[in-house]
Image (cartoon, rainbow, N blue to C red; front, side, top):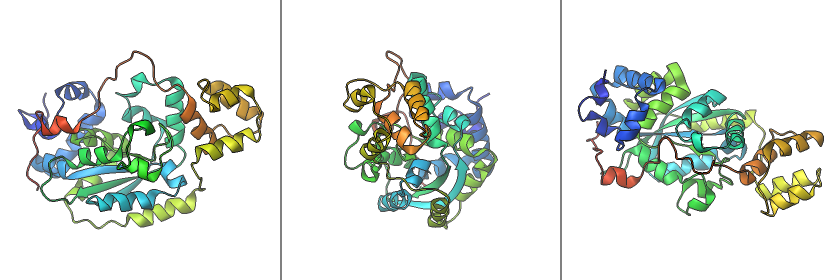
Length: 312
């Protein structure tokens, strides 16, 4: 049975991709998110979803002490924090969030992603797009501003570039791509608290995100997130020709072998140094495997089937 928020052409307010909607049809988190959105916001849910974006400030961003800078940057781009929820990005959440993309990822890539996101608590920040006359939903505008995971595919305008996200997996922040992904991913990350988020969409912005950041800073150890310095610290304990070849780009890093060498040397394989080196030098993707769900483009909304609604 088609959900009320997807009936007829209403799906076009949530996504520009019919195929993604087909893939999500049996997704339990998407179904739960639709129910929560409709329960709280009723038939205007799509309007509120288009006006709001979600910014996840990850543990690497907290460790690098870049969360405040991150919030300042999105504010400068017309995104106003409305509500913040602290949560833990566990393995179930990482597997679920990237379920339709990580089918192309190697086991090492998935393992490091789990470790990066699980290092501590994260902050889910609801943002309201305050720019006049928008041409994109807030979530897609923020996703476009965020930039890709691969540093080589980012430019100077991207949030991850400005914040100094060093590798493909230590990326500091996450954002759902478009409204349909906000529905699915917030249900997955927040569970019963999702309705709290939807209620905040219909209220004035009154959130002190700085207090949440200050608390996480007080509870965590800082790290420079400097790949070169991480290499130096590790190789001051381990001298190995194979590692030297990896650092010079001569071969990919064998993650199980590397973590075993760290343990033998009395080093923590879950440390930020280990995760930085691993995320920079492992093989990330399986060759010849297409993603289950492809990336969303700006053009898919400006030139495709999607419909931008008047603001509530």
